[in-house]
Length: 120
Image (cartoon, rainbow, N blue to C red; front, side, top):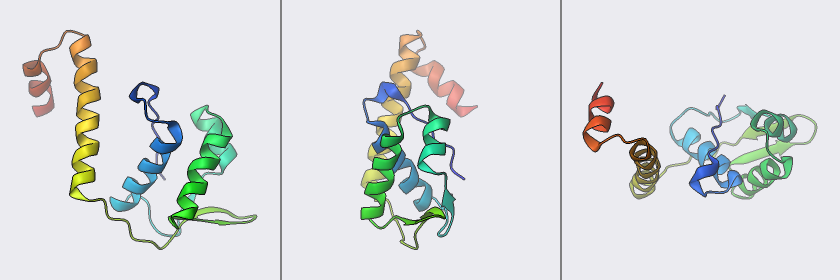
């Protein structure tokens, strides 16, 4: 099961973060076809966000055929294969690094401090 992490500081809407995490989870092999996702209500409670946000993410992924919802049983990962392009991976990593370094710099760490810690 995926452990969703939402960050309000990124400026990316929560539903988009959920979509990206599910897609990247599938592409990385962390989510398998047929695996059941939490219900909209359960995930909304867990993440402490509006259930319409979860519903919007799930609905968009259903339209893209990434998810399948079976009435009465739940929402499941479909058989679709997802490949994230190198360009998209690099873009996402750059976004993550920019956020990370901005936070580290705000605490007064230098780039050398960051590099030393990452090497450990």
